[in-house]
Image (cartoon, rainbow over all chains, first blue to last red; front, side, top):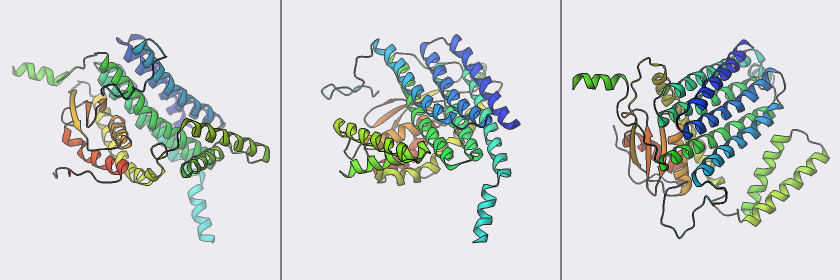
Length: 101
Length: 125
Length: 167
């Protein structure tokens, strides 16, 4: 149990460090990176807290959070690149081959 | 038959299983702290990305493996494997998406030696 | 039809693993949701060889031990770089040629590069990738040759033509 507490405290400390990067971060991409990383840690923390409280039902929430975290990152990046959600990410075949998304 | 029962009993005995699981969890927690320190320390965005990917792989995966050792039932192990699979699939994809977006937006990476090696080079010059 | 069957089997396994309650009422709800998903996937046209890569599962499983070994090695490098009091990193950008042909193999290769800490794929072109590395010595194009060969074996099902230079 003590070792599990070490892991949980470690995750809390790293979330705090990443929040500093989130507020300091010079560019937008540093902030997105921090948000994504915090999301990954929240997923693991949810599962860990579920184990420490003896309620593994939390795993379902962690699974959902993992999915939502990925979609959030992609949505933020897409919005700040095109300033719109209405543009298709898949390029039409006619265009010359550009950068892969 | 009794032999197999003994083997299964040893494998599923809570003692060493819980110890190994908790130890893996602690390793994962410590490595996430190191990775977060790296995200704070490194000089530019692209190098921070490398530090953040330590969390995605070593941190999260060892924690999930440790919890799989602690799990009381097979269903929970299945769910943990699913979470790990999602993290492995989506982690690099979102890291690549962030890096690609930053690169196409024109964020210039720092190339060349940084820190101690750069100081050495300047001394020699 | 075979692909629809494969999708239904995978969904059934997923549902049985997620639910954990095996009573008639809940099971019937599961059957209904699986049926709706299969119908929607068929209407979307997700039933060709590319969207159901079940034949690639075993080669991919053979690929994972190598990947785990690489990830552990790279993790130690990055952790050492973070913990050093004087920072001595040397970021570089290299173009890595790939021999992977199918999209799946390219995805496996690019994801493996990004998954190993210390190297990130910045951009994927037709037959080359732009990789940002933390150390110049670790991110030479020769360092990726074995990973390229193995991921093309996992994704395409055949070894690539150019053999890696033996060291």
